[in-house]
Length: 219
Image (cartoon, rainbow, N blue to C red; front, side, top):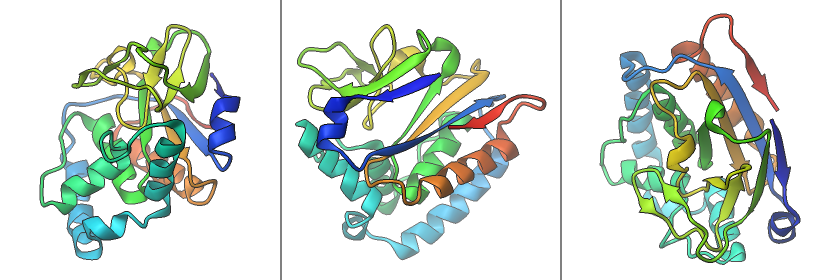
């Protein structure tokens, strides 16, 4: 899989860096041990941060700024990393979807990054390109219906958009049938912190969702 960053993104977000993790996985509906980790982390997070303070996190702040530069209002279309952090700081339970989605959400909260999680076997072609959404570009967000992605960073495969920081696309979403994961950690704040986020993601995959004898590749 080749991942290309378009000139239109580089022109407005010159600091952008990304790390992708590809893994052979075995998904599950629920993982009790993972949710024990999530509960411990959530409690600690709520003691250390407030909704006002997370706005100063470099990863969240930079993603919001990227939206503005691309032409989107980040308060109306919140990046997922920020939305998840705000949710738990409001005392609301984190969504429980499935093990792959749940562990990606944990990494996103811990780091502030918006992370795309895709069923790699549903991606069309062998190249993803990160560009900017166009007016009236069709895009069905997961659980959101048709989403207006004009002015929003978007990954496209040979068929069209599959991932934005606000929501990934229904076509390539993770499911219990997913056996190959592609996760992309988007660093609009630059390279600092990306390596640690990727290592945390791989640690959780090995503990809770890795298929023995499979591949685990970072690029």
